[in-house]
Length: 416
Image 1 (spheres, helix red, strand yellow):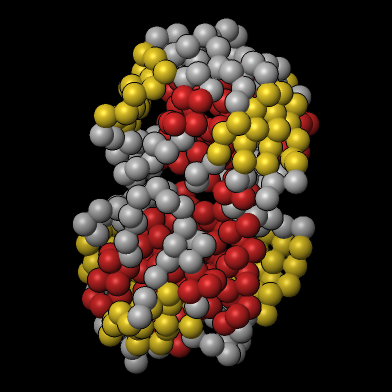
Image 2: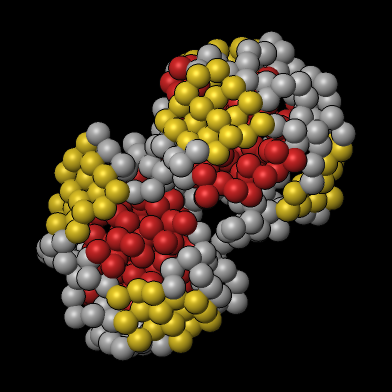
């Protein structure tokens, strides 16, 4: 099992390019099930989660070829309509095949999903939405079984915003008969990216990026070529890497508009941020100032950036309050930061972070994807040596992180 060994205390300097967004690539790949024609995707990151869904699509019968960020997918004929437990248990995004399978083929059998242990994220909203579209849903032996002759448009109001739920039902509705309206829909850029792809394929979707999305069902979808958007969470992680080490880094191939909540908090903390058309330059001198934040759905501060920002606040001047309002139990990185000398107390969904002048290197263990990133960031600024184990979590969402960090001056290596 791989681990990172980090010698901290060196400011980062240089430029780093952002990879394609994992959370956009996965639903775009699932969308290949909606057409018998070829779907071509560019800027697909080489990640554990991408490889997992590729294995799943091939299991279903999708022809998949490519490399170097390019994928060609063709779901002309499927050999299976079941997403088995062994393939789904490691990644909850696998549930994204459910809507497309039912919409195009009229049936699906999908194992209930797994993924990071950051609190329960049930798919009840997905299933309730599919039932409103006319699907018959049953739960048997840990599997969702769905069938429908043809889905029919409906008005669906989500009790809470759900990104994968919005994406799943948006894909299903593209082939439904009539008009579907999704209310209280997720507004994340990844939802907009998927809608852009679906519209290229011949779908009729309006309102993506707002809480109300309208989909007019069509008879079929066609071939398309699409470039996946940059990963805003990877870009945000590198902004914090520059800030926490007191460095200066140019973050290229990103979309600054997707990072406004993060850059606003960095500026509030005294970090200099220059915004370009597709780049951010981040400079930091001395300790950051403590700031408070609360995670929220987009365009608020992303829950996927909470752990990284907590690492920054661990060395800030003053006390900060970090409120996790999206996922419960997403403070599992706190105990590992405490091992490095951080001063953090958690009460319910609020972490009280008293900044300390310096962190100390220590052996730590990653518990989920973004927790892994926070421990790497803490290791970059800590005195001495930090060993981060179980980085297979990190490999699910960051492409060649150690190579990108090394290129801008970090002393980090992957050890078997």
